[in-house]
Length: 359
Image 1 (tube, rainbow, N blue to C red):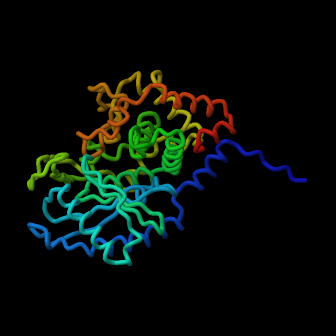
Image 2 (spheres, helix red, strand yellow; image 1 turned 60 degrees about the vertical axis):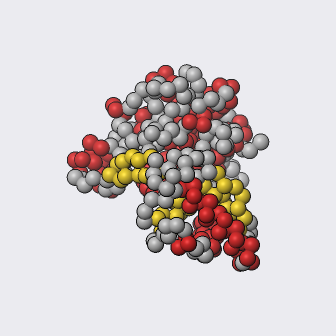
């Protein structure tokens, strides 16, 4: 009789990853929903705006394309205009038009506007395709979101363990109720994961400006203009310039990856070390007091300058702190980092399954 191989923790983690990552069937379902969503948006009469908008571009971004998508990922969608528009006013108009279209055309009644958040840094309309159960976060002129998606996808493609660990940490964060509207976002968890791998395992810093200057003289400067939260002005109140270039050359990336140790450890070991790194208050992250930043090499990392546990610099909008909403998270809730580390360290399979399961 052939003896069945006992399941290891890494067997379980890989199986869980394959269950939770975005499947081809889910992608196909989402793409069909996007097609219908685009048809809906194209019914909106933007030429009646004052001033009228002559050119519009549509694109989706986020988890669907960044390599860290799961079965429950929603769709980030942005409309790009050829000139500045006040985001809040543009989306208010869009919302009103969509409501009229849904009411008057039964072909679009599958879509429901769930909420409109105009107080966010980037205002969004949340729209749901109730038949396919696909949610859309619609915004305007979020070009940095589109570029950021390409950057994260490049990181996800560096090594299979980067992608697997990122997806599993999103599953863990949601199971532990750390990822929600008040504490961590999925995006913040991914930034923490990449930053940890850069600090501890020499994952390449794709935005390393010194390296980019050596291989390419072209500038990747982009000027961003936004209205401030709650602002009704027709001209932008917030201007900044950012460098959106990052490393994509496969040969140079291959050279940079020669020093990287991400592939030398099992995924269980990488997750254990991630939780150890961020455990409060004894983890290396809290002792060193560096900010979370994936756009600067280790020798250029800055110390925290504010009382925020997970102070973070966005890769492109560096004045934005994606970790802001976890600023005042209760210390007791952070105990799960140490608890998860201990469970993984002791190789307790049943308890590992529990920390990744929704209660």
